[in-house]
Image (cartoon, rainbow, N blue to C red; front, side):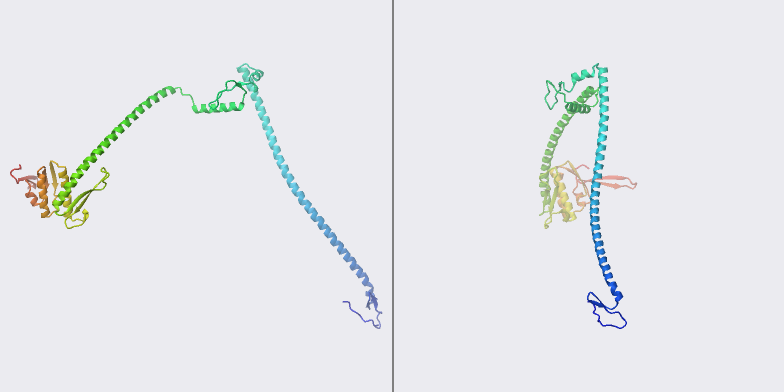
Length: 375
């Protein structure tokens, strides 16, 4: 807010001057104020003009930058196009060069063929073209896939080249000609006939062997089944005699396959419920084994038997039962028993002992116990 000065006169000073409704006392300064305001107004006009010039310059600068960016893109596209055209030009030049070389080779080939036809067959090029040119019908034979053509047809180079390539492949598969092929074929035919005859003989022999094996298997099954039935029957009887009140059986492990079956022994002495041999005592197992052995003897008798201390583990009662079985076997066979049991010796018809004399030489001593038997 402008200051208001008092309009009073001061001695020794100039009278106040009114400027724009305001009063100022210093007359010298007051005269320079309009000039300063004019300068300030001109300076503001100059600043506004400078700002407008800067804005115009910035607009022109942005337009120039946009134009420059667009020109750079167009220049890049033009350079890419120039590079592609240069590559196309190189390709065209190479193709043209290759084509020219191929044409030169074809001209050279045609010249060579013309010379060859003239030298070998005495036919000039004009005559060849007139008689065998592309427009002249020629006979084209058929192949296995298509029926043969009886009349002339127009020359088809692609078809002829295909037939030629196929014929060349077949020729390559045949290989080189073997002058000894007929002799080798005859030898191989003879060898084949010989091997075929041998193969027929082997097949016949195999059939015969299979028949024999079948007969043998059937016979083995029949004999084994008969022997097993007799042995099982005798074992039951002998076991009941050696173990009064006990029960013993023979059981097949695989009854349906007599060729692969095994035999298990079930033994149950009197007063026991066990059937496994491993749970029996030593004497019971020994007596069970003797019953099984003697069952085989009685089922299929033999002229003589050799027994080596079979009663060593038996007590007197069981030994007496075994001696009874010995007496039954003596009726049809001769027994040779190696023993240390006195009662077994007493039941024998003759005794044979081995002793060593004083000179260290062994000697055999015999003692008949039954005058009806020879010593």
